[in-house]
Structure formats: C-alpha cells, structure tokens
Length: 206
Image (cartoon, rainbow, N blue to C red):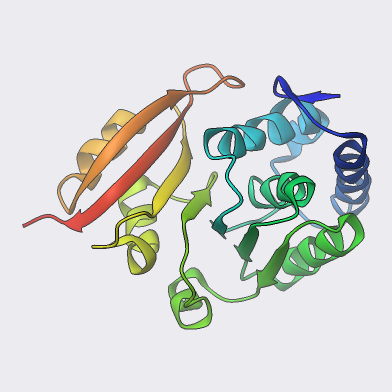
C-alpha cells in the first residue's frame, strides 16, 4: 500500500491497520481528535502525519510534543519500525490518552515510548540527545518554540517539524519577537493552505 504516496511494507500496513482499529475503539470513550474528523482517519490524520517522516526519513531520535491521539508521533514510530532503528519519545499529560498511546505502541511494535508529564516538565525526564521534534494542533508558534527550546536553543543538529494552518505567517511574525531561527516552509500535501514549518538554529532574539 501507499501512505501519502509513500510505499510501505505489508508489515507496516498491518501495524497501521491495528492502529486504526484501536483508534476507532478508544475514540468511542475518549476524545482523540475533533469529532468531525474521525471519519477521515486515513486520508487526513494518517497521511498528514506521514508528511513529517517523509521530510526526515532518517532513523533518528524524535520527540513528539502533546501527542494526543498519536499524530504524528505514533505514525513516525510505526514507520521507524520498518527501519529497525530510531525512536520516538511521546509526551502526553492526559492519562487516558497516554494509556491509549502505550496500547498502540505495544500492539503494533512501533518504536516509541510514552511520558505522562506536562510538556514543561518533560526536559527533566527526556534529557537524551534529540534530533527532531514534532507537534500537531498543539499551540501557536511562539509557545511551541518555548516548549521546544530546552532541546533546541543554541544546539546544532536539532530540527522541529511543526504542522500549521493558513495563519502560519502571523504566527511566524509573533515568534520573531522572541526568537530567531532558520525556517523552511513545506506546503501540505493533504490539507489546502496548511504547511509544515521546518525550524532549526533556534536562538533567543537579542
């Protein structure tokens, strides 16, 4: 099968199907995504999340902030399972959602682990070297960069991949008041007017 145009193995397809089954089961009891988008699981959430991995398909150490229903962190962890290396640390403070994420990772054999802590407290728990950070539908860019800064500020080789909607340019201008950074914009292949912002070289504005 193909996920957002990317060919995946039969094993990965089985992992994705398991994820979808678990998602549909758990979503009846807890709010994993906006109710209006539940029916678009594959075309919207899975494909949208896969874009992140496609931008950085290396087997590196990922940090996924505010993981929620697992987008994009679980998708990345499932795709890493095909390579047999790399890892995703998922941060989710909601205990019910964290339980869901752990169940998915366990039953799919995806390469990831869940930390049930607030994002502000995560640096004390996840102190290892991180290569890439992801977040989707979490917060405006200025706050997102505050969240990312413990792993990114004044460190080379760490890149954030952040899903953003049509108002991303306004968010970038706001973020520039507090931060300087290198920015690449990738147009979404899934949602019109949406982008993935690729950010590196994060420093406090002087």
